[in-house]
Image 1 (cartoon, rainbow, N blue to C red):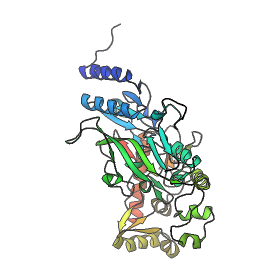
Image 2: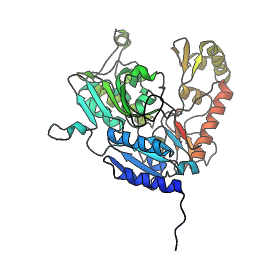
Image 3: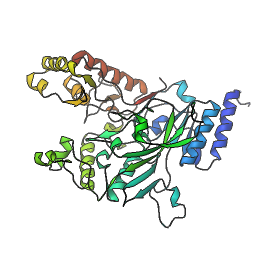
Image 4: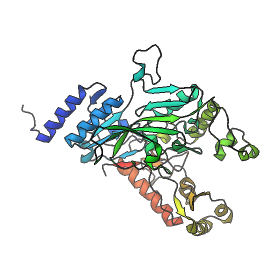
Length: 407
């Protein structure tokens, strides 16, 4: 029985994958789907998954796929991806940054300089490979007596994704502790494919859930360096719900520098809060089969605020309208996407129809969840329904936070 004919492009891609599979720090896996690689657990099966475990291997792989002009995508923890089941996805090479060894350096290990995480507990500097699981890094820094990342505990995904979208939670953004980022360039007028460079945060134009490499193919975040605080004390506690959980008084909050607590206690409190909202991964809890907060908090012009507040008053009542969360951001105002969804009438667990396999989380209205067996089309239908409803009720447009692939 003869095999099916293959195209020259397919043959050359197979040759490329064979060469990469023989590279130190690289493994090629076939048959693994994006449902296996993402926290939403949806998506088709790429041509191959190229697992990469060192910064040098990242440079080799990026140069190879760019030079070969094959379609590819970088995957870390997969917590910020919505991937379709489409023919274009089946042509992709998924470059998966990951680790297979203990993340901390071992003084007795001759190869400790290759450890995914290098930490100076006296100076507070931490350098980390982009493929390390984010919460594993947070746990390691807290255990080592460093403060600064504890409010970002429990966030799914990889270290490399955090500067790309300036990850933030509970009053802290990663930009506040970011010192340097190692980029592997994908090729432009100034950089050859695979070239690597350490840059400072100002070069990324960091803002709310934004960097200038988000939604681009300019570079891959390969390693990140943080400046943390020795002594085991947390970052200032600015988020009301977390501060109350930790017994912070209004007087403490008003003090110069804000209230602080032991980083370990803050981490524990954050994890409790996130568990209660279905925001910590658990394969047995469908509320965690999500991409986290699906919509960014909308930032509006200040002169639009009275109109939106009036729409809330018409939908709800005076007390609800006056209590609407609204935070100044320069000369604009940031609203709460979760609050708007809930007050629009789409409550926890809401579905497009009774038997839909996708719904809002039963614990938190900002998470769109796969209840088991959902497809990308089900998630897209739910997202559009939420956007249309909130826009129709309050006149506010919600923007998705995840990256969409294959649509």
